[in-house]
Image (cartoon, rainbow, N blue to C red; front, side, top):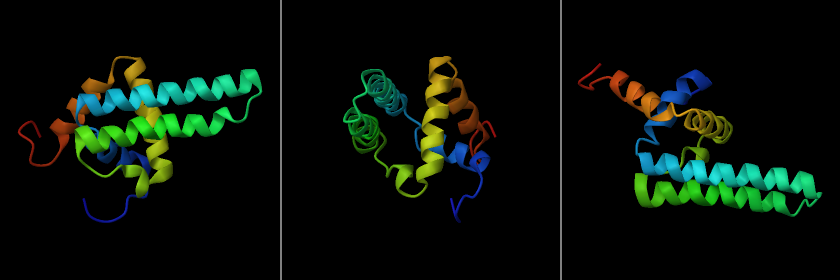
Length: 116
């Protein structure tokens, strides 16, 4: 990929490609679910100290997956806001049971792929 991405719709295929392995996506799901739960708990308990724990939870599982499974650099270092949106987009699709199909669809659409 060359050049900087300026639109989310162009970023999404890149993001999914950076999360091509199922294990990576699953660890992201665990981290994001934990982070959301901690934000809800912080609000319900009026305990703001849980907010930093939410950040740690979300990023720990995500970055661990890139280090141990995907073996790439997290997109959040280059595209922090798009990556956050992408993570919640992926999380929502995983809740719906549609993320694996989305990853397959985008992989098949890549230039040079056998299905393209």
